Amino acid sequence: MLRKESVKAVLLLSGGLDSLLAGKLIKDQGIDIYAFNMVTPFCSTKKDCLEHQAVLSAKELGIPIKIISVKEEYIEIIKNPKYGWGSGVNPCIDCRILLLKKAKKFMESIGAKFLITGEVLGQRPKSQHLKALKVIEKEAEVEGLVLRPLSAKFLPPSIPEKEGIVDRGKLLDIKGRSRKKQFELAYRFGLKNYGCPAGGCLLTDPEFSKKVKDAIKHDEFNLENLPFLLIGRHFRLPDGSHLVVGRNERECEFLIKRSNSKKKILPVGFKGASGIFIKDCSSCYEIAGGIILRYSKKDVGEIEIKGERESSRIFARRIPREKIEELKI
Ligand code: SF4
Image (cartoon, rainbow, N blue to C red; front, side, top):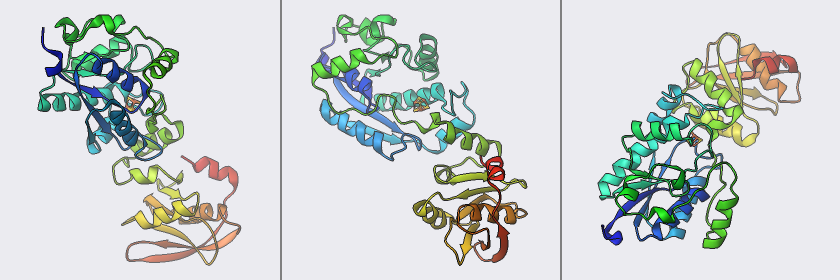
């Protein structure tokens, strides 16, 4: 049997309670643990919340943490996930595969022997049932290398269990969506630094998912457009144009500041929302102006359409509420 102090393992630390507990259980068996966290542009509605939480959790466990960020390749996965989306545009199985692939690379780079996750069998319908766990391990080429201490008693023994590196007798039999046992354990271990259990994945949000699906359909889903999909009211105009209008002063300012080469649409001489065209087909400016007026106190007003070098002005009339609803993405 290997001397446990010499064995390194990589903990996939999300910042939630389950992975914190998984880490604690295995650290208490004398394994040398390194935390690993993958940040995507969709990790949280509160930016950096999860990253920050994972750092706090690593501190609580007294272990180092490696954080990586994935962008372009993650966007491509969302566009075309091999195993499909969940309730929104969340490609959970593909996302877990990518995470394990990245974690495996890190594991190899530090000479660690296996991976630890906080997965609980049956907790998430799309990615945490036995068949999905097997598919994920196979695709990520980490078969047998993933130890899931919270549900281990319901799962076939992993390599570190078979080799006696980890004592299977001390692993747990938690299953399903209830979190009662996890909260009891957190209390018993005195663990405090963990985030909300469901995490903050924007890709499961129905409103955001609608926008992403529309953007994918119109070939507009990319890193450049992403910040605009995260804010504002979105409209698809009859000519195919995609207009974003700020919901408050902060969003209007953000849109104008970050518009770069995109055309802006602005109220002239009156207070109102402004916006930008993510896609501009140039034949629906009156409707776009009518949308800007909908979010002002005026029925008729002058509107400026401003490009990088050119600018034009039109008079538009506020469009009816029903029409707005039809155009909303
Ligand atoms: S909920 Fe989001 S972060 Fe979690 S596995 Fe699914 S896609 Fe990935």
